[in-house]
Amino acid sequence: MLDQAQTLRRLAQYRNNENSNHEMLDMKDNDLNSGCKIITITSGKGGVGKSNFVVNLGITLQRMGKSVLIFDADVGMGNDDVLMGFLPKYNIYDIILKNMDIEDVVIEGPYGIKLLPAGSGLNRLDEINEEQREAFFNKLNLLEGLDFILMDTGAGINRSVLGFIDCCDEVIIVTTPEPTSITDAYSLMKAVSYFKVKKSSKIVVNKVIEEREGKATFSKLNNAADKFLDMRLQHLGDIKEDRKLVQAVRAQKPFVINYPNCDASKDIEKIALKLCGSNNEHNKKGEVKGLFEKIFRIFT
Image (cartoon, rainbow, N blue to C red; front, side):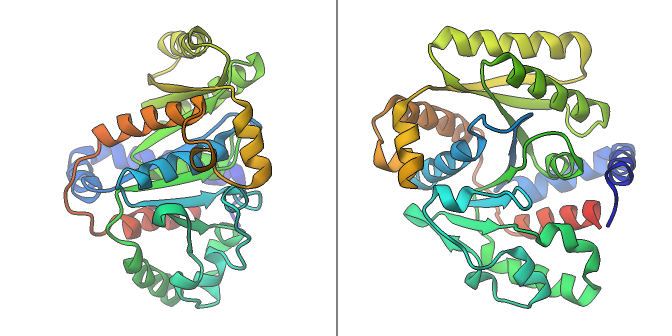
């Protein structure tokens, strides 16, 4: 298993090699990602409501007629399944190393949304051989035709989070107006900029009491990014503090289903509409395999 420093050096080298051939790769990436948008959703610290955001955003997009896969990439601490009211028996480890069928591991949730739990499988990618790798890639054909893949990472700054950010088309950083949350979000942005992983990020401010609080939080991050980082930020939206969220989590029911008319559900819908507006309908073949090829290349 690669240690964190070694993996980050590999990530930086991978980015440098990619940049040296960026014209050719940009053409290739545009072909692969024209139909399916791969979005990594992360945060600088835990407790900001990131996974709750991912689950409810995914369900809202699915309800809008999009085909969505949530990849729970929070290794060892994933809880998207719990938020959706499921208790999965298997994860990606069982597909790769135990030769299970992908349809036996992927969970189908509300409106047909799909959830693929990562579990401990990503920590053991260096154990697989070429035959197992190809067998896994062949199974991914069953997941083609998606409009969105939402990757829910762990919180903080580590090799896994930066690796998943590198694999995606777009990154969304979830923060709150709390000073510690803003500081940790900036630290994550700083690492992303330093390793040249991404030059842009969307920001979602959760748990806002009023609209101006969200604008002020984004302004602080944006001013710091403009001054110190090579990174452009976009304010994707805010999610209001809402007691219905707490009730929904305790009931293990997504709040956009239990309370579709609450303020938070309306905020999620606005964010989903923005994402749909930038997602064009083209060929959707090969995106899932392309994503996991990138993951394997970085983590093994």
